[in-house]
Image 1 (cartoon, rainbow, N blue to C red):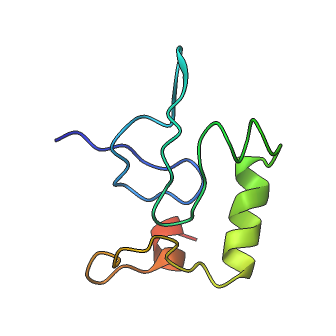
Image 2 (cartoon, helix red, strand yellow; image 1 turned 135 degrees about the horizontal axis):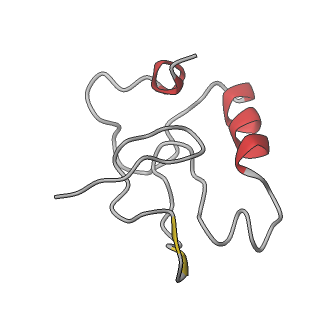
Amino acid sequence: MTTYVCPVCRYPGLTEPPRTDAGPSYEICPSCGFEFGVTDDDHGVSDDDWRRRWVAAGAPWRSTTSPPAGWDGVAQLGE
């Protein structure tokens, strides 16, 4: 199964590309909670601004499902 990287938090497990020529995927990143096509297009929040907010909140896992074993939001960013 092909997976895609979230451009906001670098989570490597998105099931669809966040954006294509056809538009946004509307997928919600389970790591940072960014919804492509809604958070950005409808609410006007940029990737960078959402990343700053997510990191300021402690880079928490945003899905209702459990994170992958050993998941670390800050380490995922590679910063």
